Length: 108
Image 1 (cartoon, rainbow, N blue to C red):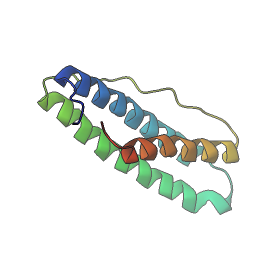
Image 2: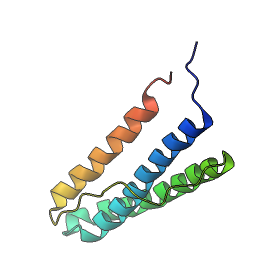
Image 3: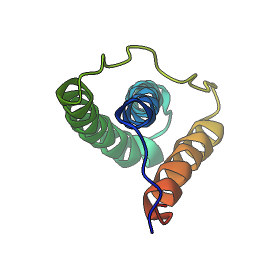
Image 4: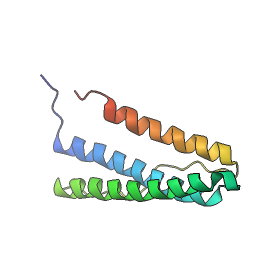
């Protein structure tokens, strides 16, 4: 039988997800603007699109939190910044992996 969680626990988990959405939005905006070199311009445009998608996710998550009677969090997780294009791209890719693995993890 699946383990049940309380409404407060669900709100807390959604707020944690919301903090990661904010982190992703900020990271994609920053990284898309500091990429240097013609070879990265198409990647910069893709990062801008990802920022828009993350914003839509954040709005949905905040809506669910409100529906459940909670207050959506307004604080992002920290964003790693660097002047190094390769470092920023590695960070952007690395921040996506936990989100995907958490979504794919079986729920108890």
